[in-house]
Image 1 (cartoon, rainbow, N blue to C red):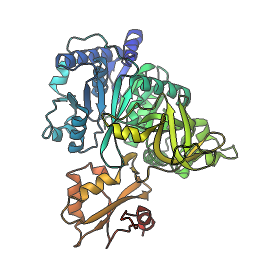
Image 2 (cartoon, helix red, strand yellow):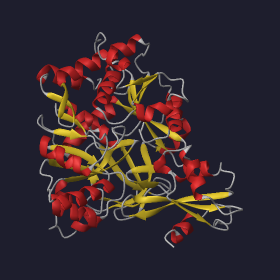
Image 3 (cartoon, one colour):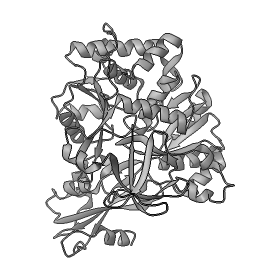
Length: 500
């Protein structure tokens, strides 16, 4: 089943209902949304896009994003959402690796991309897209459950981005998981896209299309706590995704305003470590609005969920332990803890988190070696470390060995290290994360150089090759990197001194 059918159903059922909004302004009804998506599909087909082809989106959060998104699906193609915070060179690699036929962009970040790729660009705010949205509509293209719907690029521990194949069937089950384990959605609700729509904030668009809810895009195209509070007061009830660092900022601003965010019904948080003190303070101020989920691109938003009741409960004798967990397995997921060989461990023992079920990917895009290392005997080996208690609550005791999560975004040290090593002044480098109250973690680079390092020059070098959010916030020059007998850098030792 092509999931774009959910949009068509609501266009037929309640076509006059508001669908896409920019701030307080209604941009499209469900009828207009569906009609323009079908027209974009017709334009894509006229350009030679066929079922199964890939079409990318490298754009900020604007209403036209979802029109293009559903137009791609309507044509039977797969969407390749690219984080708008990425450097143009990183986006160009994704376009090449995915074999994208076309990429929809906004001027920022699309303008630099136009200089380094041959893939045709269409500006979502430009004349060409306006013409596409007025093309002759075409019928919905049929898709099977195992057909590719979404190609999600996530950096691996080597720093080489890998495309996670997400199918229509996976997204259908993930959507039903949301209704079973996360929250209910009603036609009068709205979802607010204040975090990158290419990632966690956007993957919940489907459940809100299914239920005929509104889709709100902030005028700022990003996260501004005051704007979110104002939109909640105007458009509530609102649901939205927030990274833990966003929850922290949102709480601070709301308390300063004396605003309890009555228009915000549900905040789903994920994407990094949430400190118990922060979520306790947030619940004390806002009330029972919060649900936590745990997932990976390889099992999108679908591993575990910590319900709003568990997040808000202060009466259970183990409520603090539960609050420090990431919840229990979602309906369509089976979660286990394994040792190095994948043998299941009993409750309470620490090991690698493993998942299987209908939300798990079939494999990485054109990367059988990586697939074979990650999907073993039917289980997804997440690379995360944790334990399950007797009641099924999963607690993360560590994340993927080296990954840094800053502001809800994944940063893999190897990727940063490889860029820094191309600078002529650096002989050796190792990158680790350091706890930070605002960002969750920040990137710290330990550098070995034959001369005094120029931090400004290194910063410029990073900005020329990778996204700004990935560059180190701090550089530490040392005489030599700690290593074991095999010459492997001991990052455990660097983490011990990172705060010194």
